Amino acid sequence: MSSPKRRIESDVNCTLMSNWEVTLKNDNRTATDGMHRQEFYVRFVGPEETPFAGGCWNIHVELPDAYPYKSPSIGFTDKIFHPNIDELSGSVCLDVINQQWSPMYELTNIFEVFLPQLLRYPNPTDPLNGEAAALLMRDEKSYNAKVRDYVLKYASKQAADEAEDDSDEEDEMSSVGSYESGEDEEPTGAMEEI
Image (tube, one colour):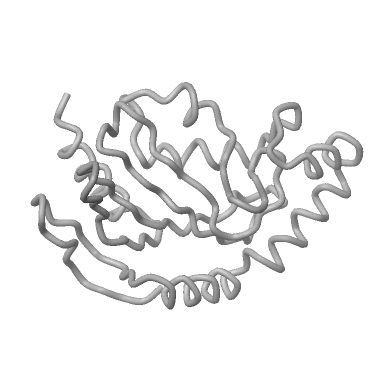
């Protein structure tokens, strides 16, 4: 298996070359612990044939130095109504990421398989959002209507663009077409606003 640093570069490159819009955030280094983390945002679209269809969310991804041996940290930055996603923090309760992560998984698995499956098959018996879990168990039709309402209010392309603009004002980020290797190099490539 390759080194964690090489694996981070490889997985980030694969994500950048995918069909998702990816916004890289500059690497963070803390003087006290010397930890190196790669952070970026992926624009994730809700799966078809679900009440999340048409939704567009920004997912914050943070890769620890020990990646892929340690799981990535992911969270929704836009509001979503789902039993296994905390509405305020965007934290995701998903065993395959939180407890069962394996170095065999790649970042693309998160966006191609894990998150779509989570949205298709919520688990109301292990909730982070008790209101969503209770509504799903009590009245699935009302749950689906509330999910669609949240998609319209918080996860339309326009809402995601507005949230992106707000976060750009708080911290400098740029969308990048490629990621160059090198410990102290900045990501380079064709820049565009998303």
